[in-house]
Length: 87
Length: 369
Image (cartoon, rainbow over all chains, first blue to last red; front, top):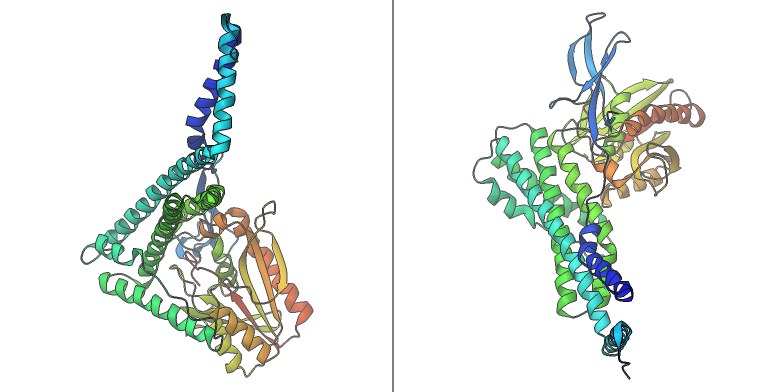
């Protein structure tokens, strides 16, 4: 009985691999989850704030006023960074 | 031949059968057919996935057009352009090749722009440019799908296992490119800067809120800025819509306008990194850093050679995926390093009072001026 199993088990493993391999190969690439941030800066002082990206944001867009000196603020940078997973 | 008695007989029988089947497969070439069937099945699975993302890209394109208030049936519009082609000019006769290629590329661009302008009359130029890029992504994905399907069917029809094997081995790379294009849709739909926007980003930082700027060629801006005692002529595509402009024509016109009295031309562009290299690394070189099909690069090289102007290039390394998806933090941070490099070039290789052209090359999506 044991000797038959030696033949049958690898045969089953081989057949399973044959069926599953294409699906394993085509599996989606794992890409890190990203979040887009917008960096807002003051045109006059050193005020800077980083917030979530909103549709309509673009670099050098003048928007809002500085809470420190009341001067206009602008978008300095927009970038994607890897979302930190919660531990 | 076949021993008898107990479980060992059955095993011997299986052994012999396996041996005979294997010999049969080898001598009749069936093993190759079996291998080919496995490859075909694998390619079909990839193809199904590409078909799905190409269809989804078309759907997203139709949705974007609808959101912008498309006049008529956006699905018909997308279908009309989805297999749009360009016939490359004759290259056996190289005289005027770049001029002919530029003419064809301009004709193609005008076809797209005019069609979108007619169908989206109440939208801004930038919104239409973004819709055009989304359409381009859908066209690219459909093209990948059609090519893979063509070679798969051709390989099956002609029983060409070499063709099928080549396709099978290239499928992971093709899939990676297709998925990258698909992911790029998000950045273009939301008008976010992409990795390729690093050149225009550096130019925008140098010309920040400068009022002395003008359109020099269609969709291309030039600004005059004083820096380190030198006069900088900063060239970039007009943002924040998705647009690459015509930097070659702009540089040519500037050099001619200043009668060749330009000390240096410095070009900034994103460059594809090799595997294992760090993204956002800034490196220097010589030559026209621009990845156009040819005409723009040709103009820059020509005008630089004609007037004997040194041509410097600064590139920022990134992968294909990083280049066409939302700009990563490390690439965004590289902009300040590029400005430092420009300052070094100005101090080391030019004199106070010199005129220097700085060209930020790339797609200016999400980057104004």
